Amino acid sequence: MLLMVIETFAAGKVDAIYTRLADRGRLLPAGVVYIDSWVAADRSRCYQLMEAPDEPSIREWTRHWDDLVSFEIVSVFPSIEMQARLKAPK
Image (cartoon, rainbow, N blue to C red; front, side, top):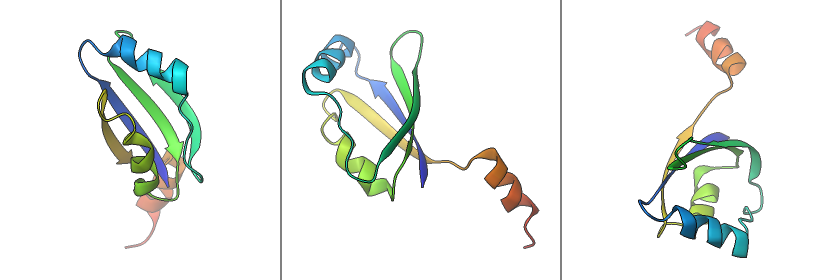
């Protein structure tokens, strides 16, 4: 399952987030694979593309950051897969 994890950083907490990241790291649960990420220019939001067996696998990881970050997890499909789905007979 391909997931986009959108992280919105709590106002005034960006430095605390980066400090925790430097101190503890951000190890992913078994079965979750990091693909890519990017951060908004104002450092208020981070977008991460991950592959996971299911959404609860990602939720296990996010719960360690809930005090500093709000998360939105969205299932996504690569464009080639979506094209195939759109062309498939109904």
